[in-house]
Image 1 (cartoon, rainbow, N blue to C red):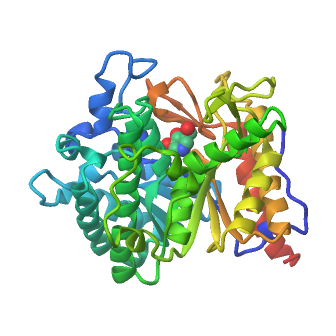
Image 2 (image 1 turned 90 degrees about the horizontal axis):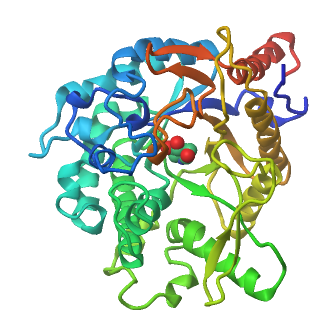
Length: 452
Ligand code: IFM
């Protein structure tokens, strides 16, 4: 069986480094009746939007099975669990609170805390209430203020039982995939829409962060951003320039405003109509200091010039791909972490997502997913290499705890270290889960044997 090993001297094996697993609300919860509709419910009803024509109505039925799932997480031996709250499960259209929905999260967090787990809560992992989308969603500035109110409800209910709050998960996906490329909910398109949505999401982040800092000053309050290195097929100046633009447009667009209070230079290349309306004071709200930065990483992307001073993606040529068709590029992960560390003055970093979809098969009660385990082995070592080069990384979360609804690809892609049989809702630990658990538990043996 493939193992996950780190050098015995790695600081990732010390008591202070957190190992966890992560999920998100819409992807696992089900129980659509227990909440109002969100943009993904609507998107799933659109013909052709989801590759296997499924939806999140049942998903992993986590709302009903959460106690079993928490036991499963606990049995893995991890230190932390990252989950997201479903805004439409908590806030009704009239602005009142869905007490049953809120209680679900209070009970979940309580149980995790009682087990000694550190809980990482994301307030927004893409499931915008449909009633807000009906008023323009993230194209409407008011949505940022609605998010601030919702953040206050959560901060009051969960308080400092939560170890770390993230305002948003991957605003790039919400803005670009959802409002610019149209491949995620709500399926809108156009540069102006994408940039406007991104600005309002960042504003929402800044407003909610102030709320979290006020009510939960002892929690770690931050944001989770996704990054993909922008590489080129050649060193031709046009290609290098294309990759620089892509990096600013897709990666730095979200980080630079938060850390430095300004958008990257690529904004100057947009027509006045495509630029977001930035009202006086917005950038100060967005640039509130964060306690930590969550980084999600899966792969690099190769860009070349499109011949019109812009960039286009070059599809991967290598055979080392995951089931998503994404290249397996652990060295690029180290490069990314070191690069961000050198470019910015960053707070401590948590790797809040990293993992791989593979073509799993459940045979005789086992999933022999050596390729996923190998992915974890190389990527955890990539994190270790970055730490050795001076990057302050405090934890790592495997994406995902269990197979779940992979957005526009429905249930066709499996990212879990735990296999889910969607007919029976039976969970089966894949070999990657056993390997991850063994690594995590090996630290306890180190403490007991006195190595540490
Ligand atoms: O499943 C998603 C998750 O919701 C956000 N980050 C990327 C994962 C894999 O695509």
